[in-house]
Length: 266
Image (cartoon, rainbow, N blue to C red):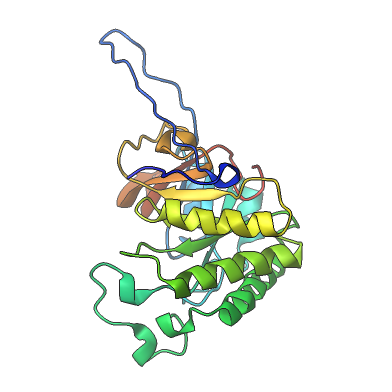
């Protein structure tokens, strides 16, 4: 599925690219900058071991959030920056478990957070403030992009729409950090319009940063725009793969970005 017709100000342009193959042609040069994300912080030693020998120059940085219970990334910005890593900040907000493929049950029955019942505008605004506070506590400067992680759903409910709109508007209203969207290829067209509308409502003329998850056609040498989405700052194309560099093995998701520091170098 590709982009449907939308109002001109909100249209996400689809890029169609064709690559001519030649048995004598040299390998295509890299057009994007590889980065990786992994749920738990690998440790300073592992991050030092990978920086240089591996092709990766930036890393997904998980802020404390409703649907990310880990705290291992918190406080690691300075150490990672000293090594040389760039960042893509992630805030895993409330998810619509009712609409997720293969979801066994909604955590609403047992957990006070990470629940479909919390998909409200009030929670969205509160969580935007939480994201900003967490980023500030770790020393991320004004203007840094924070990507709202919205996991794949079979359909986008009104409740999910309202939560996303409120989160984006809340972060824009704080006038310190820039909201971005992480979304699966299945939902990205519909979700990106919500974010773009919130930008327009706040008088923003810049394009909202997009991190799209799409495995089809991915190559670690690709540019993010080759994902099919012109707004893409980051393209995630490989999930849950194990790689070893400099004697250290990690389980990672593989991405490419147009910047070595995606949350700052838009």
